Length: 184
View (cartoon, rainbow, N blue to C red):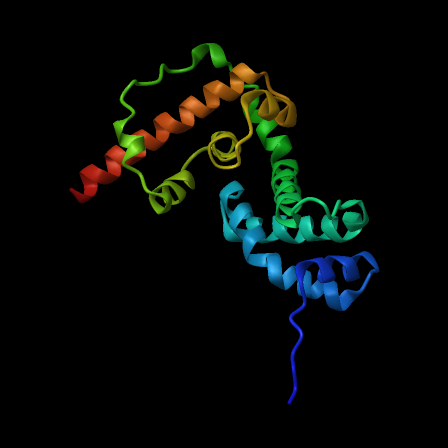
């Protein structure tokens, strides 16, 4: 009788630290979907998301010896994917961030539209947000960064992060209203 041994995540990571291409491929295959799920939220199209994932895995393999095995691998990978996506957008985001915030449109107080969204509705509508708003929405609402952290990562004042998050939520409300009117 042939017994198969299931390779654990720790074993895969350990073998990747030795430079094993076979285990790097296993790691890539095991976490590709997870990384792509994160990347898609920060990218406007599938091709861009795939490039972010591949760039992130290159970083993972280059820096795997710095990974602390006392912490969850998924969290370390998530940080790398998010940072890779943001790095790819930094120039565009910097350009968008230079817009004059003094002319920002006031945000409505009706939060009921956003509360009615389910996860798939949000992901669909998020693709219609401007890149900076999409990135800040993802970082704050989905990945749990606070405005100070977002500001540090994107080189923005925390107050600008708040404004862009508000704009993103307002735009989502508008998109939801439009979609509801078109289908209702």
